[in-house]
Length: 246
Figure (tube, one colour):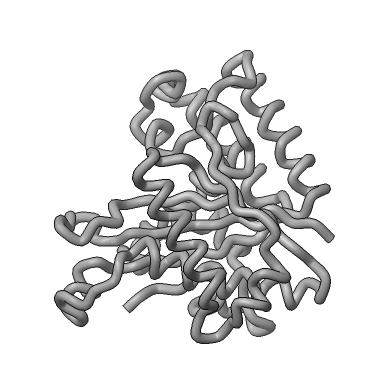
């Protein structure tokens, strides 16, 4: 069976600056089976047509929260209530799995000092490991293509180098050969391509990060997607579909 894994991020991965209010860098991936991806695309297009009369609006978490651009319609509280109800229904009811990794930069620097590794590289390694574990649990011959949103030529070049290094060397738990059997493609895509899977990953990333930073404070968007996080047989997702480091 063919699967697609859409990867997005929230927070700043650089170690030169740590925002005290948001000291976390998080990568969030959404794994979708080919036939379920088509269902999600159809529902998201219908959703956009309902609220914007066009398919061309890109669902972006920050713009939605800030009511910016096309999302200024959310200043109308009735529209806002209906918008979130319908969007949450899509995110909650459709079939996909979330695999995320958050790096607490503040704690990372305290623990490792000058030896602290790039948060993006760390998070990517953790996620790829868990993606392989997840695919193995689904079926021995399942494969995946990874889609990543473009960030800029320099950033994309560095990320591709990190990915290739992981694929060539393997990780602590997964060999290079095993990675290469499972992951068949790693590609960058512009936001303008309007890829539904990348938009779902974007919508899931911030709630994951928010819950890591403030787990004692209930946050509705996290509750909407919580049951989508890859977990073990006991329903435990920490260390499985959600890896927090250190």
